[in-house]
Length: 328
Image 1 (tube, rainbow, N blue to C red):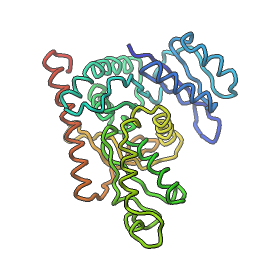
Image 2: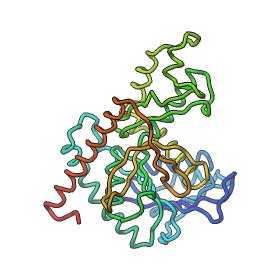
Image 3: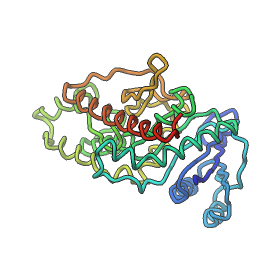
Image 4: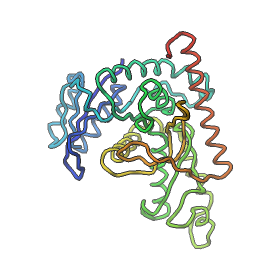
């Protein structure tokens, strides 16, 4: 059974909100505990409301050292809850399992549980945004929209944002430049990401052109090394970098720090729900303004392969659930 946690973010720091922001976290207790500990360590201006306060005794003690962060007992009113963050147990994930039908089998129980939880949230008045941080988050975002009927702009997967953040920092360190000097894009699924090298820019210069110039101290071997770095499957299960990505999304969604995001999205075509792995802007309205990113032929093919894989997993889950009547 999933555990529920609700957070209210106050108006302190530089953030400007008319009313406190309420957030619910759903998922594995250990993952949620780690996230709460991160928030306590940074004394975020949050009010975290949990269902079982006794289960968080160390955190209750620790939060006494905070001036802004608070940990309190549960509130059942979800009508003002702005976002639900999903942090499910990730032990199901096996990087060696790459057949769509096998992946579907490993996810089926969790998708059934997702449906039940979505129904409970809606019954309690929830109508906000959803953020999913889990391997194969494209599958979870699809079925969350499928079960809830929410606008596709409201449902977001963390996707390859952690990989993009790592890549950006690696390039900053290697090139000796500021983050704002770089335009970086990672593509694909969080379990199979790759870099759009043709679309990475240092200032106004394409990175590939820069590496080929004679006045730099780097070579093209850097690309292979960095691709290996972001392809590391351990990133998907690294709670620290995943938490940083969640906070970046919250910053974009609620604190007017919009970002250009390449990752898991959804769209509707003639009322049919479809996955979309495209560039979008994330701002206070959710995922907005689909942007066409010019890709090389190989990059476009790699992206299509990832999308086909995800759709095969979705089809397999629907087929299995239709057979026993669990998917409407």
